[in-house]
Each structure stands twice: as structure tokens, then as C-alpha cells.
Length: 142
Image (cartoon, rainbow, N blue to C red; front, top):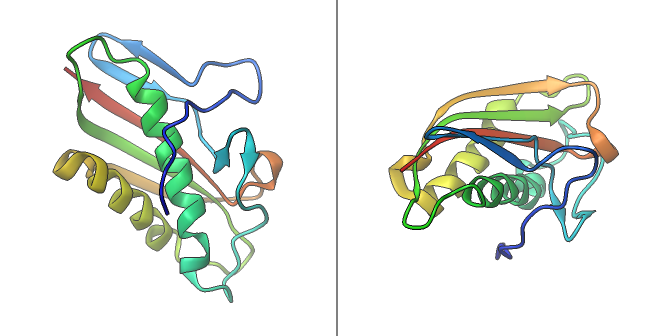
């Protein structure tokens, strides 16, 4: 999927990312493109994982763009330190880490080895707008 580099639009009273020193923290990002989810609904065990790849990549792209928006001139993302992947999973779904791999692969495609982070992939009862995934990152800038 070709990712359009458009800054994510907050869906509430928050900012896409904050910064303290060299650390950038993003808000949770869903798979919205121009404010609209590209996929909605629970992640289902009987659906092939590839069905969710574009949504995971869009959420990861939104998080990376939000982080990049906090960079100063001449800086770059040096390392993704933590990747949190929240999965709106139906009961019985157990491949959370496989979905999270799509996010890591996307981030590595953009940042090289700096895209590999400590990570958690969590199943949740629901997500805003019935999004299938939400992604949050913490990264080091410099």
C-alpha cells in the first residue's frame, strides 16, 4: 500500500504527538486516512492476516508522521524505542504479535533498523470508531 504523507487529524481534544527533550510520544493512531477509517470492525480469527495489513500500515504511518511533525530542522527519528499495538480482537483471536509485525515491517521500511523497537501487542474490547488497530510509538529524535 502506498502511504500518503498527510498529518493525522485529531479526533478529539489532544495533539498527535508531544516532545520532551529528545523523546517524542505519539497519541494512539488508528488507520484513518484523511480522517476516515480505511477499515473498521473487529479483527477476526477466520480472516487472513493480510486482510489487516493496510490498516496496520496506515496506523503505523500516521504515528510516524505525527512523530516527525515534532522534529526540529535537521533532526530525524534516530530510533523507535517502544511500539504499542492495540488490537480490537474478537474472542479467540491470538495472532496479535503477527499483526504487530506488519507495523514493525512498515517502520523498518521507513527507518531501517531504527524501526525495530521494544513492543507490546494487546487485545482490547473495542477501539474508537470500531477501528481494528491503534498504534502508539515513543521515539528518540536527534
